[in-house]
Image 1: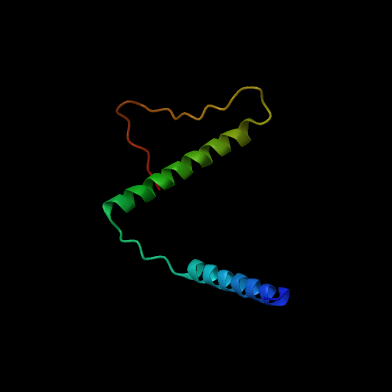
Image 2: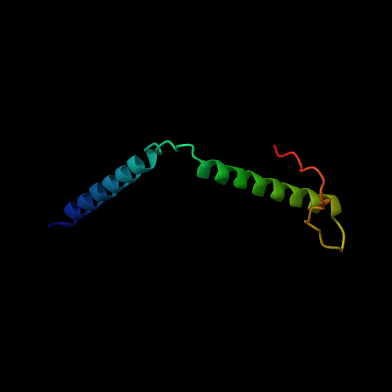
Length: 85
């Protein structure tokens, strides 16, 4: 085969690979059923995001300073639980 034929074959294969990849990435994800596990996972994700926000706020409030940020919460024994949003 000539060089031109090999170039055409290579280009066709590249186009097919790009087409196949774009089709696979466009497929809609299956809907997630809401179960106790998914609700628990989402609640944990939100708590982790809130903790990250608290740390970021603490860093902004103490900058510039030489003391490290304390990312701990204080708890009063027997006190009412914090409202979680």
